[in-house]
Length: 134
Image 1 (tube, helix red, strand yellow):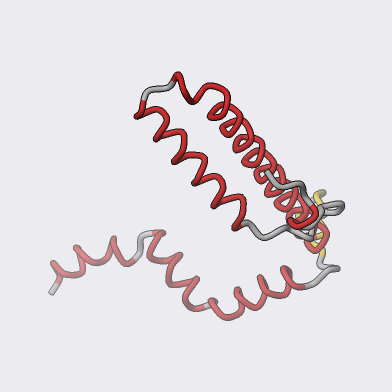
Image 2: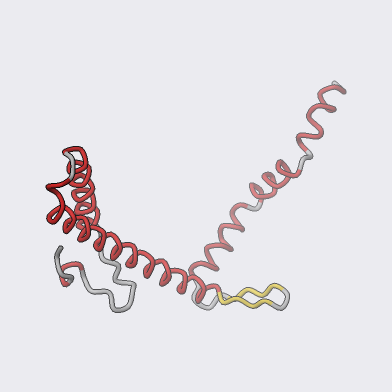
């Protein structure tokens, strides 16, 4: 009996296990707290001299992600145009394998750029139908 205690004692009292138990015990209040901060536009947090408006921070994060998504879309559309021009201008000098790879990349980029949903959260973002087609 004493041997089991010697084996299990350090495991049960280790910091990861204690942390997990605390998280499980306070799971519901922690989830409620996170939900309150993430859904409230006026939530503020103060840690020492640092003051943060969480609602504003979340909104700025959403805007930044929207701008990053639009930048990625533009880069994909630009790359598609480059590949189409390369294929049209220089496709005849490529080997069969290179032409096949180029065509596969063009088709994949066409599928990706055509299936993207426009991000209306980004200010000044035109709908996909208003953008010039490639």
